[in-house]
Image (cartoon, rainbow, N blue to C red; front, side, top):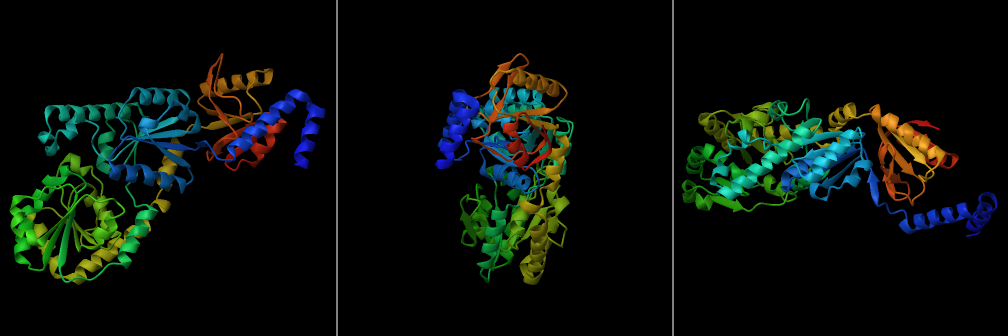
Length: 479
């Protein structure tokens, strides 16, 4: 308190009543915030446009985790909560499965005009009706439902085309996306730290059983045709092996031809992802059949990854990402026809040691190479390579003055030269404002947590020097 009184008298004596009042207001504002940040300023904002929990977890939560561990700070938001105010807090924006809306369209246009980069992320070919028209399940929709679905696909494509680049999960998806954007980066799906932790817990609680349990875990009801692909084989095997059981999990309709085996079939509802490691760990063989189509070739290898984390062997169709990622007979099994499905499944059912060998090999691979915290370097490097240089000007105030006008002119010149420019205001009372050169978006020092990296940070008066000197993530600091 004594120190505060001394500073007040000193300011009154040296700077006058006006400056004392202004600094007192700032002090009160700082204390009112109590250092609880109202905003976060970071490198990347991922905007989620998907309501399905599984895709948004892999492509939003996991990529945020990857970037934060790999040299770029990242945050997330739902597209319905996106506002133009978010433009000033980030250098780059990733729209995941985001349909176009008036706000999204305006947001992307302004972002580009301010030299910020915009990416589109997608994990499925739901960006053009020429792909989605091949999904058999969509033919069961009524006219209104189909029109609504198709409208979502078309709106997704519009957002994609507005973006500078795309990020995706598989090489086939990458090939198709190149028809819509100039460059695509493949960042395959990986497990989060929490997934790895829950999987290890499930492993430690795993119990031996006499039966051999085959499991099929469906992501959605659209996968029913995939089950039908191997249905004759399942029927043969259930008849042949008395100790064989089948577990079906998720949104799947049990075919009539399997109902005679109802005593050997266990049906579980759609589960939260936190429960999945425990459920998968209780089976011996994980099934991942896929019809051979462009749409399915673009799907990721999540089923193999999730099973490998709990040392369960996966048997998959020799299609797309499974064909690319699984080493047949080493860390998984690939099948190209009915004969291979029957022969290879029979061997796994009969030979426990063989099952365990492949499952252990898969586990050792994914635990070293497929976890978020040490797989984000490529994604981070790709995004960094596309970012425009950014400069932050730290001002004591944005109240109109000759000095402020000079800085505003500098900002205009830099923006027209391709720089991403940020204004940080030490005076917490000022917000965005208009100048003769356009709108200036202003960040307030005291209610914002700064995680963003700057190529250049400029102090503009002695009172701003300390903040610039202490800022941890600026490559060059100038006055």
